[in-house]
Amino acid sequence: SFKLEELVTISSFLNSFVFKMIWDGIVENARGETLELFHSVHGWLMVLYERDCRRRFAPEDHWLRKDLKPSVLFQELDKDKKRAQLLLQYIPHVIPHKNRVLLFRNMVTKEKEKLGLVETSSASPHVTHITIRRSRMLEDGYEQLRQLSQNAMKGVIRVKFVNDLGVDEAGIDQDGVFKEFLEEIIKKVFDPALNLFKTTSGDERLYPSPTSYIHENYLQLFEFVGKMLGKAVYEGIVVDVPFASFFLSQLLGHHHSVFYSSVDELPSLDSEFYKNLTSIK
Image (spheres, helix red, strand yellow):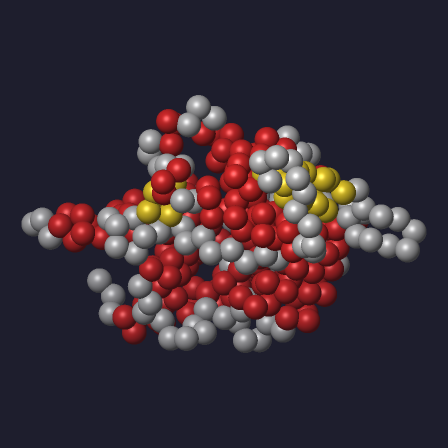
């Protein structure tokens, strides 16, 4: 096995090597096929990067490319340069998180303009109006939003809260109401009492409940949860949803990699079981 300082050196080399392959345009052969060499070195790089994410061995800012200026990257993406797109696809970790957030917000703004979702002097975007009873917020939200088209979900959604008698609540800013509605919906769907999600022992991270099927429409509910999280991200609304890392790995498709090890993910589900398992000789 390698010493920690050796892992730092190896990971630094692989990080630079993969970056250079992408930036210098030597990821594919003349037929447009991804080179086997790139697959191999990128795979090993991500094994080390993910290990560092689980248990840090590298120094601060080890993975960042300080010679990659944000302005240059933004310009490359504006021009639809393939190398900039490949960089985001394969090694987004070389870009500081704050710059990735700015980049994403910029992409969202441009898409909204393209889809006509932004108020202009000559046109107003389509608005979806929904009426929500506070006592049945999840049920009403699910029924009224689950069938929305993709563009409608990305657009403006106005929420009107009413009481059980159907009387409107007054005096609340419309945009503020939607933010409140979204935050409350997310809080409800991730409540372990609903049994759509469970929490891990110890650090209480969220993952889908193995018995979520007790809900007749549990698959549709999961889809609805995904749409609500997507809407929050799209609108820049910060929500506190601490997913377990093994679940995030599944969402990101890491389990398809030949380097994936479910044993490495086990501590994020049950650290005590992992310790007992690894202590067996």
